[in-house]
Image 1 (cartoon, rainbow, N blue to C red):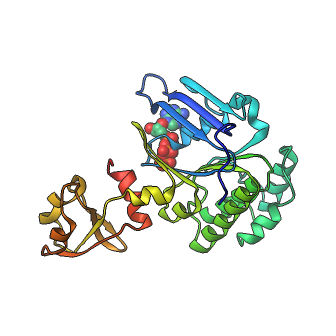
Image 2: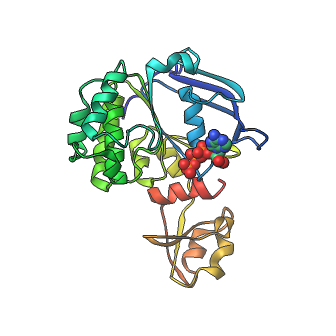
Length: 293
Ligand SMILES: Nc1ncnc2c1ncn2[C@@H]1O[C@H](COP(=O)(O)OP(=O)(O)OP(=O)(O)O)[C@@H](O)[C@H]1O
């Protein structure tokens, strides 16, 4: 991860950003967001909260209903040569092989480099001579990452880059994010995966009411309440001690967040409570995505 650059000359600035479709209520309204040069930001939020729409506005693919966006001081549409936008399943052509896709994309994009093969190798994407229509979801995502990350631009907008990737590939992708940050590139990526939290300088949690939380991962983790781990089947009577009366079934057991006015020691002694402990990355994700802080 990079040292954050000064606030004086941000990569992207959005003010009062509002987007609606037709007569429907706005997807989001009045959003203010600034992304600094060299910063890696993860945008997280529930399904349908508007993450993809927001990225599309920043990329110049969608016109905001109100508000302003500046990308390196220009309107998004005029800044297209400065950014690359990886939209989910929007890049690779089904009828071409992986290699043909790369040739096509490299010829198309003025800032494409021949790095795509290196990225594909690093992500262990073989089958480059097979038609993309026959790829699995993870193979397709690896190809899209190879095409996107081989373009040399100052700004990368990535919609769910780690969806469908196996854990080893996710680690390799995180190392690539570090390389981009070291090279001063700005990255804004969406994700539903708590594993990605550690790869970012900054987390922005977003829902239809706007920005829920915005800060460094360590600060947001510190602001997350202690976690109450309950015995299987013991949860319901304990719900009043928990934020929003809510329990989450996770790989690490049934977990809830200590309510604001409750003493952790009292809760730890309650029947049915296995432990009161510090939040993990999945807890941080659940707290900011599913519980209003
Ligand atoms: N072209 C469109 N026309 C009408 N509504 C749209 C259009 N594009 C997106 N929406 C609506 O905007 C809302 C936000 O969609 P968006 O895809 O940005 O959510 P998201 O946060 O990326 O969700 P997910 O996490 O499921 O990918 C949804 O209600 C969606 O139906």
